[in-house]
Amino acid sequence: MNTRNLYNKIINGDTLKELKKIPAETFDLIFADPPYNLQLQNNLIRPDRSKVNAVNDKWDQFESFISYDNFTKEWLSECKRVLKKDGSIWVIGSYHNIFRVGKIIQDLDFWILNDVIWNKNNPMPNFRGTRFTNAHETLIWASKSKKSKYTFNYQSMKSFNDDVQMRSTWNLPICNGKERLKKNGTKIHSTQKPEALLYRIILASSNKNDFILDPFLGSGTTSVVSKKLGRSYFGIERERQYFEAAYKRIRNTNKIMDEYLDTIKNNKLKPRIPFGSLIELGVIKPGTEIYDQKKKVYAKVMIDGSIKHKHSEGSIHKVAAQILGSESCNGWTYWHFQSGNSLKPIDELRQRLIPRN
Image 1 (tube, rainbow, N blue to C red):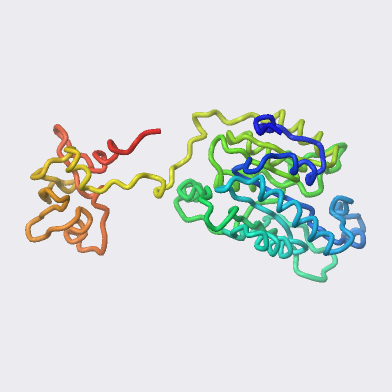
Image 2 (cartoon, rainbow, N blue to C red):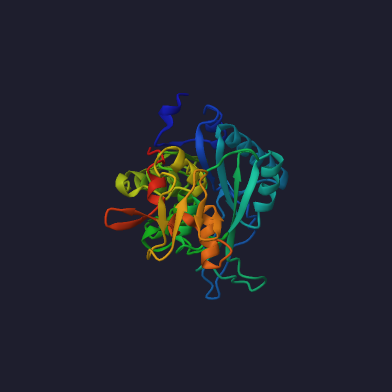
């Protein structure tokens, strides 16, 4: 199968059979929402005696834990084969299956990066009153191997979270309202995932134009969000009803304009340029005076990239910290150079040396 023929397509077929047709190392990211094997034995009844529309579909039923484990090992093995060496996978589940899935993920030598708790703002109550309300699901995020250089858009997620590091507990509502697909007032898919959940996953762990697989596409949420965010997608769905709903939903989805798809680059991806490079490249000459923002403090640049201020000498960071009486200071933003009639941070000189894509 030609990989290019898979781009931005979904197919109606058996996951295990279709995965085997795909060339190795095709996808940058995989999101999998497999059957949970909920083992529901009886109907759930509300206090008003109405029936709860719970998950009792045949696709979620297995003869035993052994058959479920064998199924899980088979599809995860195929996912690992089609995942690029620096790719990663997300698998979502509940207490019914996620611990079994997690063990198999480790047995297959994936490298677990995080377990993320999706805390549902509006969970379904426990109508029988026999246990705590099940208000969360667990996501396992793993790279293909321990050595994988996987994508994690740290700076973007920090910006997304008001400049605070994003934690592994996510408070998001379940899928409802206009987003929930229905036919004649009945849910089309019993476990449709909210777009907000996939938005966060795809934004965090992929880049524009990456290729994303969902082997259990369901109602199509992964492909919908991938399309919106400028990623390519491929999905597999066995149930015809879900496939048709997903196809229509994806077709009616518009991509966000290219000019708005850029994200903040991680600092670790930027080339490290020491202050000394500015001197050896002639951007700053030895003897140049540099100043604080108010031009009340100055220092002179030495040939080795150190600076001198009165009795202090050392790196741009060390001398700035000594002047401020602090443990550390970013010298790139503290020190300024004269540019015409104004002062500009010396970081502007460094930016000139950073290659532009």
